[in-house]
Amino acid sequence: MNGGTPVRRERFPSWPRVAQNDEDGLLEVLRGGRWNRMGGKFVIRFEEMYAKLTGARHCLAVANGTSALITALDGLDVNAGDEVIVPPYTFVATVNAVLLRGALPVFADIDLETFQMDPKRVEPALTDRTTAIIPVHMAGTPADLDAITAIGRRRRVPVIEDACQAHLAEWRGKKVGTLGTAGCFSFQGSKNLNSGEGGAVLTNDDAVLERCYSFHNNGRSRVTGNAAFGYQHNGANLRLTEFQGALLISQMSRLEEQSKRRDENAAYLTSMLSQVPGIKPARWPEGATRSAWHLYMFRYDKAAFAGAPRSSFLKAMSAEGIPCSSGYQPLNKEPFIQNILGSRGFKRLFSEASLKGWREKNECPMNDRLCTEAVWFTQTMLLGTRADMEQIVEAVKKVQAQAHTLKA
Ligand SMILES: *Cc1c(COP(=O)(O)O)cnc(C)c1O
Image 1 (cartoon, helix red, strand yellow):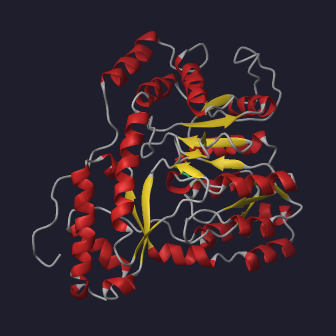
Image 2 (cartoon, helix red, strand yellow; image 1 turned 180 degrees about the horizontal axis):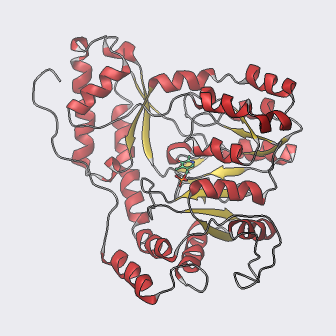
Image 3 (tube, rainbow, N blue to C red; image 1 turned 45 degrees about the vertical axis):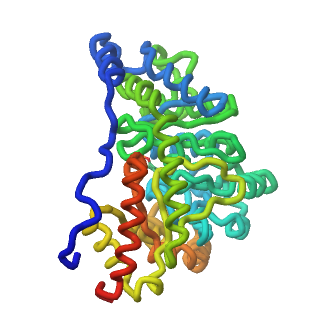
């Protein structure tokens, strides 16, 4: 940034990775002429494979992660007028899915050390209208599932895991997405398993599976399928196509190998970066045994960087050839949420007193602080070599050494 030689000029690995089996699968679907899941074999095969991989009893493929959440909410009978507990540190889709059901998202603050939903903030947020708790496995690292599922059991509120970033992540050796009543995944283009768009709901509950299947298929049952115009339920068309099913099967053949590489690179980054003053990598909640490393996140303390604000740190890192970002803004303060809560429909569903109470309680000070301190690297950088990781560390140290030259 000051005119010297950058640490690196090469790009980090590109995403997605494409191989021969991707082409073979897509061509087979194309030539076979069955592009819809009805009568096809790819989506159903993917569902079987993903259930086996995760240890779930059932997997239902859907159009994307947002529709996975909406489908799971419907599957658990979460409806207009209900309340759902969500963390504020997540992608907007977690909140949108709740709002699209006509339900009220109630924010439980995060833990500043782990960046994950703080179980201690969940219990006080529950009311007699709460019909689901949605922990998000942020960055692919499990949220505290012991504590959150215990609250769910005690208060008889189902837990829906938002595992959209957390393919192959584990809690005490079990795959996330299988520990709540339902688990939701995304296969959107940036995610660690990718078919452009795509999603899935996992559940061990037969009745929830039937209801989710029906909801995602215009209310038709799994048994009668598309042939019948008899409906057991309201629903939508949220089906995955055979093209995406084929692509997920071939992409999945490389998922474990890619995840191992991210594991190794992230472990190295943590061992090195936690020694740098002012860099605090996100800690795992006790009980997390594997992260998907969809993102590598840490907090930046400007005091250790001559007072240089985070924005200067990000710019300097980019100038050194290391792309990084500042991540999410405080979601609970988004004006669009205030707008919808002020809409005619929501005012009919929720009393003035309850909306006033929501506004008064809608404070997440830990999240506010995290949003000013967080720095992210993407999962594709973690697919690089050890030498790539060494350059990331070198750049952080170099920026720190020159921090006094950065604008405060
Ligand atoms: C990506 C993502 C979603 C939504 O998935 P789409 O496939 O983009 O609809 C939901 N929640 C989280 C945490 C995500 O990262």
